[in-house]
Image (cartoon, rainbow, N blue to C red; front, side, top):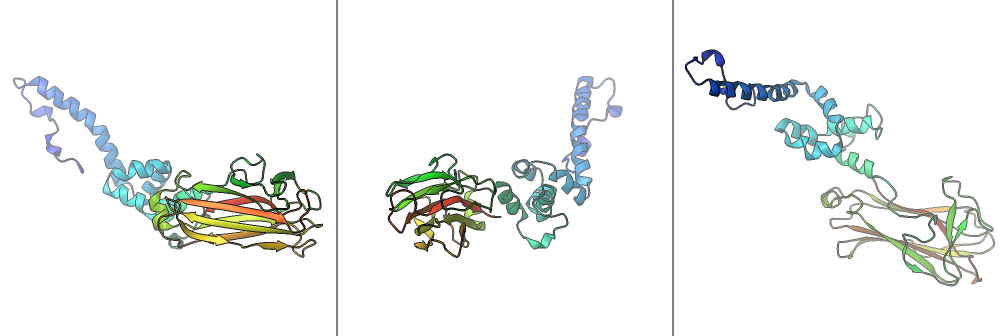
Length: 294
């Protein structure tokens, strides 16, 4: 049988004489009986056509495919490392449309894992938990305050009906930040250093209709030792009262080809009013996000 180093060594009871060693013959029979089901299972899987074997493997959890199935034999390793299996899993789990062409993407395995992990990596982006999750909080003037949408002299956030609150800044600069540990979020070193998936930072800001304000966003990609490897800064953006851009304005930046070594993302934004009125007439921010895209 294929895969068995010594197929002829399996016991053959018809050739054993009664005067021989019946105990040894019995042991050989028992051993052969125990090995046959396992051998038959391996042989059965080896004989499956590749499309059918791919469908069998695609039903298994991704972690089991990589950590266990890949080690079974050379054929399974090639299947687990290949694009067709992961394209099939992506299609089965709705990550790509059925019938997606295999040649549209070289690394379907990486696409699968990145898609499954895709989420906003910032905590408490809309102020539902006050300032929980934010660090290096700078309370200029009367400091940050969380308010309910639309707020005084404000507008509703029509881009996502789940957003109910925002952070309001005051008459001196108010700033706050979050630092995302990419490895703690499930992105491993080889993926970050070799694939260098796109890292997207987004923020929404708005002013009041009765007062102008200033807004600023700075996003940095940091190394293990927090050296700055890439940086984006919006600079100070002036929002006049009764701006032509009525409502909420989105700002976004995508980091690509940023080189090896990125381990953290530092997201910092802030605002203040431009009329120096006591209270919370400065820039409003909400629905901030950091994404690692497939």
